Amino acid sequence: MEIPRAEPLVSPPSPVGEPEVPDPFLREPEDDSAEESSAASEGAQEGSLSPSPAAEEITLAPPPVSAPPTPRSPNLNKSIPPTPQPASDDDDDDEDEEEVAELYLPGLTLPTMFLPIPNTDPLSTLLTKYIPPEKRPPRDLTGDYSRAGGELHPLIMTNSWRAIARQARDRIVEADPEDVPYILSLWYLRLSSLARMRLFNQTAAECTNLFGVLHAAATTTVPPAALAPALARVLPFELDVLHARLKYWAGDHLGYLDALAALLRRCRAAARAPAPASRRDRAQVAMWAERGARVGLIMASQLVEMRDYTAAAKLLEPLCLQPHGVSSPALRSAVARVYLQGGYVAQAAAHLAAVAADPTATPAQKGTNAALFAAAEGDWARAAAELRRVLDGDPDDFAAANNLAVALLNLGRLQEAVEVLESGLRASPAAIVSAEPFLFNLSTLYELRSAAGADKKRELLVEVAKWAGDGLRTTCLKLPTT
Image (cartoon, helix red, strand yellow):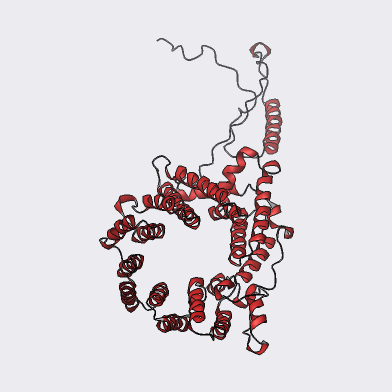
């Protein structure tokens, strides 16, 4: 019988002590070392109690080898982390917000960035000069916004720009300097309110302070190469437009056009980005396209003011047709009016005919265009008839009422023109007093009607003071201040 080679021919000696068994439990390192030392001592004691074999049967023990560290068994009962969700637009927004939060601009919240708002205005000056104290309507020039409960909507509806500017200033000073997007939105609210009050010098000074702090951040907190992308994510586009407006207030109209052209190139570059891959990217492209259209309208308005009607019309004509063949009757009507102002009747007629054939144009748009074209041809009777029909369809169309008064004046029907404007003022005084051309025409009609026009204009001044709010250009009342 053959003995398998796997079995030793001589029985091995009995082990000295018990063999080490890996501990299946997780323990602290100090406990493991203590247990190993106690196990070694117990093994030595048990070896000494066992009977010693004969000297010739004793084999040399191998040199002591340090036992390998006891492996830790995995915890099979631990909680499994949730599966990560795929990246979404919200995640991208969160990442952007984290990047935006890296901007720290404490200079934006300093009280020294702001100038005090005057506690008077030109309308109060006229009231002091022409209206006795007992007949003057009360006007709040303190800018107290607490009476509206801190809500912006009622302040905007009442043209309380002084209170809005003061509220924005207080919120900026109290804001956290790390919340840069919120602070910049308040800055736009502050500066636009000052501009509405026609405090152009103060608006320019505070806007210069704002952009000085933003540009100085490149040398203090943000590397110059990273400043432009960081500001592009948090700076409202309206603040860039307002900053370009500083050149206009300084009398540099050509420089203002150059600044607007730079903004328009920026909008076009962003709108012509590669094909958007996500819904968020498509929304960004649409947003920049809409911004570009707005800048184009501002440039066209400036060109009309400079009497460059051809350039204004050429700038607006590409905007008449929107993507996917969507037409804009309102914009095409505006182009026709620009051509009429420049004396280009044929080009204006082509655009007006396109609006008349557009099914999306409202009857009011078509009637108003027909009236303006008739006025350009000198047919005031037809213009008045068209505007009458527009008013019959919408009695609250005060632009049509103003145009009708002009048509009636050219027909020599002065008293009827005055009645049209006065009826509109009685129907909606809050809306009419903010329409300066309406007030200018009514004041002109008062002067033409009789020598008592000064008394009627003083009555109009009292009515305007009740509803106008802040920022009215008092020259429309045709009352001298000196």
